Length: 313
Image (cartoon, rainbow, N blue to C red):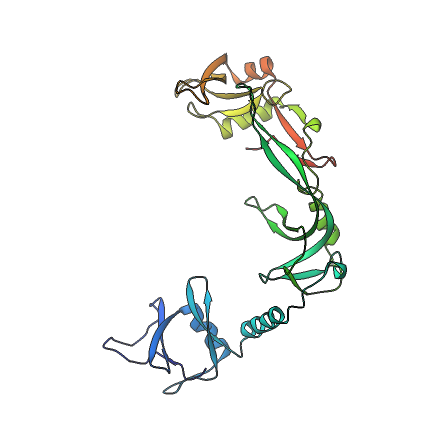
């Protein structure tokens, strides 16, 4: 509809506006008013004219951007994109599996764009509880059958690239449009990332690799990541995952360190377990390195790709 006016006085408040206010009042021609954000106002003025004494030119619709009410000009590119998206939804001409092209971009019913990667086994996990109090439970791989893989590239908190996956057992009504029918230029690079994903190729414990820290690297890691009498740096002292120990400063004033392990004991409350800290050795970091050869564990997928680097901070 049309006839919207910025800051029209309809009540007993002061209606003048200045740039320091967080919201702008807008008058609806049906006799009520509402507020929009400064960002919404700037967007309106990019796509419509505001005539003094007459209000905003053109037609508008109401919408939402998160929790904020927005006023959207029908001449704006966003409105045209939304209108096209709604037309596709109402036509219900959903993409069928036989029409999928590896490397092409598709739009989902949630209005997200993904590259179709192909149809592959999808691997998940289930937790297996250990009956041994001294051993952790573990996750077992579960093949959930063939899925259609869609993905787009993103980055993690360390700014490292990875694939955000959408894996579908069946397409149903999820894929509504082909955005492109040609393979994207970086499909090969995306597939390389996919091959390092544990849903595509599961973790294989038999490929675990135990690597002894270089002495300088071990010293650097302890001092940078755990040089405290309260907190320690986790290491392994044997070639098995259950040989976890911690290296930490003996006390606040000491220059010596100690290596400790946490033994599990039955809980005094009758279920579960508690942990008791046991000191294996006291000495300098060099002495600990010589005596225990601290190491870390690299994990690999079934296809041989590195899944997890154990030498991290």
